[in-house]
Every structure is written in C-alpha cells, then in structure tokens.
Length: 461
Image 1: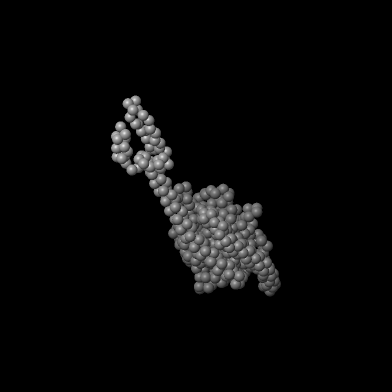
Image 2: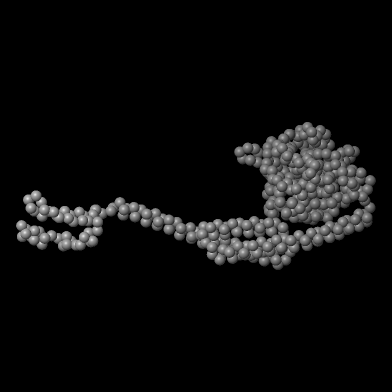
C-alpha cells in the first residue's frame, strides 16, 4: 500500500507541491477510506477566464477615448475662438486709439457700437473661461483691459458731449444773429407760422445739407424726407424718411426728432410689403406725411393711397381721369404729387383730357376724395417738381446743373396763373422730391440721396 502511495506522489504534477499560500483561496484535506485507502480532497478557486469583465473594461476604455477626443476638439475650437477674440480686441484697441486722436474722427453712434462690442467680447471671454474651467492670469488680464477700454470710451464721450454741445450752442447763437441781420437788411417780412398774410415767395435761401440718407447708401437716389405737416399732439418734432434705389416705395421710417434722424436712431419703421400678408407698396417719390398718415401713389391699381401709421391700415382711391402716362421731367412714375400747406391737402397730376397739362386737386381729408380741381396751362413733363403754399402752386424747372428756378405759379384762391423767376441753388443736379412744410416754412428736398432743406422768405403784405 505504501508503495502505491509513493508512486502516486512521484507521478503528481509539479504545481501539486505548491504551498497552501500559493493556492489562493483553494484548500486540501486528506482522509482514510472504508477500505483503508488514502483519500485526498483538493478544492481549487474558479479559474475560468473573466470575459465579461474584459468586455466591460474595453467598453469603458472606448467611452473614455471618445470623451477625451471631444475635450481635445473643444479645446481646439476654444483656441480658435481665443485667436478671433484677440484679433477683435486688437481692432477695438485701434478704434479707441483713433477716437483719442481727435474729435473729428467720431460720432456718438461710434461710442454705442464700441460699448456693445465690448460687452459681447467680455461675455465671450467669460464663456471661454468657464469652458476651460481655468483661473489663468491671462483671463484676468483680458478683463482688466476691457474695463480700461470701457472707461476710455466713457471719458471720450463725456469730452465730446461737453465740448461739442458748447460749439453747437455758440454756432446757433451766431446763426440767429446772422439771420436777424439779413432780415433787417431785406425789404420783406417772414410771415408767422401758419399765416398767409404775405404776397408769396420772395426768395429761397441757400441749400442746407443735413447728411446722406439713413441707409448710408449713395445708390438710394429716390426718396423723400421731412416733417409731419399737421403733427399729432406730442409728435411736433417727428421726422420721417423713405428711400430706395428706384421709385418703388416699400417702407417709411420715423424719427422722434431731428437729432435722432441725424444719428440714424429710428423710432419706428413701417413696412408696406409682407409676402404672406399684404402688398401696400407705392411708386413715385412725391409723398407727404400729415397727421401721422403717409399720402402716396399706390402701385397697383394706379390710385392715391393713405397709410395710417397709427392704426397700420391702408386705404386707396382712384382719382377720376388721372393718367399714369405723364410724369415730371427728372423721373418716371411721378404721376401723383401730394402736397400740404396752410390750407390743407393737395394732389397734382395730369389727364389725357388736359393733354398732359398739370391739374391741381384739393383733397377732402375726411372723405379722401378730390373735391375741387383747377386746370393749368403748363405741360407736366416740362416741370421738374411742384409744391403748394397758401393755396398757390409753385412749379420748378432746371436752369443748369447748379440752379433751379420757380418759373410758374397758379393761385387757386384767385384762379390766376403767372410766370415768375425765383432762382435757387441746388446741392446736386438730380433730385426727385421737393415739398413745403407749413409747420416751419421750409422746403424739403431729397437731392441725389442727401437730406437738403431751404428756408423760404416771403414778400411783405
């Protein structure tokens, strides 16, 4: 028996002789069987390959790899943004330096734009800092530079306001003195606003050029501008503007006062066209604003129209016998010319019956109908423009590229026409809009894309 046990021990594999510590969680015990034989019981730990754990580890590794790649891409994107931001900061720095170089290099609008861009830049820096979860000194340096630039902009604007306002006040005083001297010298009186106690126009002053149109587009040669000829209470200082590259009238913009007009800070823009809702567009550039209502030539069908800018409604009505075939000399589609003066609302046009000669129509503002007409002897196409003052029509024509002339008048109060010669200077040759406003006794001209106005002097009664 002992020989058999010795033989089994010699034949056992080498790992069977390892110590119990090397077996890990395994165990070995021995006993004597019922027939006296030696019985060995060996318990080994689970040695099967952990495939599920390896698979889980591989999945986690892949997920971590994707996350790392996303972060790398995000950092790369943020680096690009940072380069762009640094470029914008450099541009802002250059512009601020330009502002510091002299007061003639900037306007108030520049300050507002700079403030907006500085705020946007600061927000982007904050976003970048949060995304990178960084407290780098570079970010603090950017914040400090932004704050310094904001302080410089505020100081420059304060300097601009305090100095330029003084200059404007002194200039206004000087201008009033000069006008008073001129009034004392000339043998005429300037009638009270709203009064017709005068003998008509004596002279037209020099053109006063405000600036290029609000769209800052020299190609917007067709348009008009001015004040409400009968403003609603609280809107006495309201100005309006409409312009385009051709005679299409698609929108009109309002400004609360002259300063806002010059600064291009619109109060409200009214669109006359919406692809899905309406088409209220007009044509021609001889419109006026009266009681917050735009009176203009309707595009289709050919008719006169009024757009109420308070209720945002439109009404159009055909003028009996009015023709779309006759326009002013300077431009096509100037078939209906609206005017407003101390006595009300007017429209001039031509008919086939009049052989193209100008017809004056007085509009009843309540019924929106032409209630009375006067026939002139002047062919419309020979006229460059026309306007009304105290019920008298004044028609213009071109003398040369620098000179315009009022050459014809028709007094509807007396049913009398006459030929006159009142010349005035043009800023540029081409213009499409000329209208009188009774609230300030000025002529408003839209001259080749520029706002121009003239002071009117009247003969003494």
